[in-house]
Amino acid sequence: MNQRTNSIDWKEIFHPKNIALNLIGVALILLALKGFMIPNKFLDGGVIGISILIHEITHWPFSLLVLIFNIPFIFLGNKLLGVTFAVQSLITFILIAVGYTFFQIDAVTSDKLLIALFGGCLIGSGMGLCIRSGSVADGIEIVALLTTRKIGLNVSEVIFAMNTLLFLAAAWSFGISTALYSIVTYFSAIKALDYISHGVEQYTALHIISAKSEEMKQLVVQKLGKGITIIKGERGYLPESFEVKAPCDIIVTIVTRLELLRIKDEIKLIDPHAFTYIQFIKEASGGILRLRKSH
Image (cartoon, rainbow, N blue to C red; front, side, top):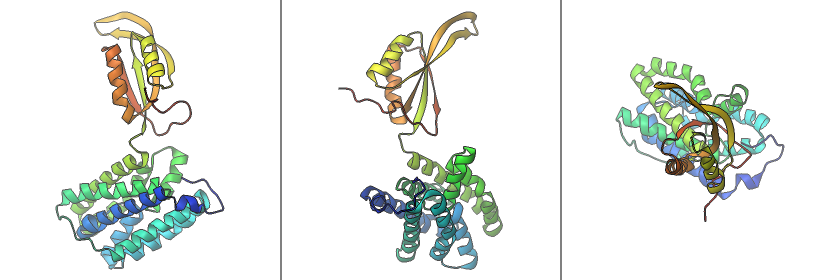
């Protein structure tokens, strides 16, 4: 996200990549809303979910509701994340409102499970693309992004906590069955949002414990071009030979999910009995994070 600034960075707003990501994201959101969710009274979370709920109860125009309810978050985004971010998000909100008003999309299906899964995946993917373009498609994400800085939870966890009352209201208005399917929709959406916003290159901590630790170090550093950290430990302590132990170097390196399979294959070639485990991490910076291309 953009840092707090007092001037609009028009180059960033109109960068072709950001425009393309935003338009594709909005198109997916509109397909999810008009093709799956709203015709069947399914809710998403956040401002979009609130707008759907009020639209179904009062029959006020959804496009007007989603725009009005997002306005306070634009001011919040401007104050805390910068005017460029606020302008980008305003453009996204307007595109969703205008697109919903003028583009006709027929309902794709009435099957509740398909609506929950595909509707959720489409709207989550759309929101993830909007985040990657430098904006948000739902004002509640601004609150979530700010909250993650304070309490350390990821965006989807914060948004889900905020949406508990919304799903209770859906149960009261539309029945428990629709509310439960809406929760499935939301879980599909947050998984897609996380995957798209973090990308397939989400970083992973790979730990390697092997009797051939020196060969493993050379593999990771020299052949694969990754940085490593060494933790001194002991291996052994098996149930049938508890007294047998030996000092070892626990090798820790940061890789992406795309790199993980290749590295694990290389490890098996050196030591088929090597013990490895992975931990998914939220963020990594500095050091050597990219896999060096071999020649």
